[in-house]
Structures are given as C-alpha cells and as structure tokens.
Image 1 (tube, one colour):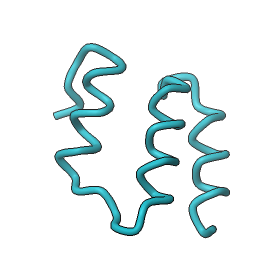
Image 2 (cartoon, helix red, strand yellow; image 1 turned 180 degrees about the vertical axis):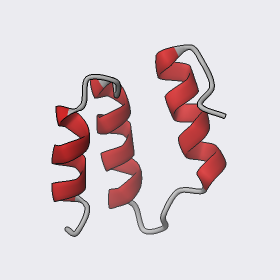
Image 3 (tube, helix red, strand yellow; image 1 turned 60 degrees about the horizontal axis):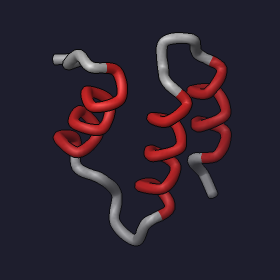
Length: 52
C-alpha cells in the first residue's frame, strides 16, 4: 500500500481535517484512483471552502 506513508504525513498536517485523510484513504484503497474533482469536492465539503 504505497499510499500509507503519504496518508501518515498528511495526517500530521494541521490544515487537513482527519475526515479528509480518512476519506482519501478509502478512495486510494479502491480499485480505481479518484478523479481530481472528487478530491476537491471531498475537501470542500469537509473544510467549507474550496481549494481552487
């Protein structure tokens, strides 16, 4: 699972909510990688503001 170290580093950041890290982990574990718009939507829903 190549993404586990990445998720661990992401979880250490104060500006990324834990719910985003968890959801991102679920998406990365799926058969297909998520599209960029899915990631932006997930972050926006958790934080309340767009990263774009």
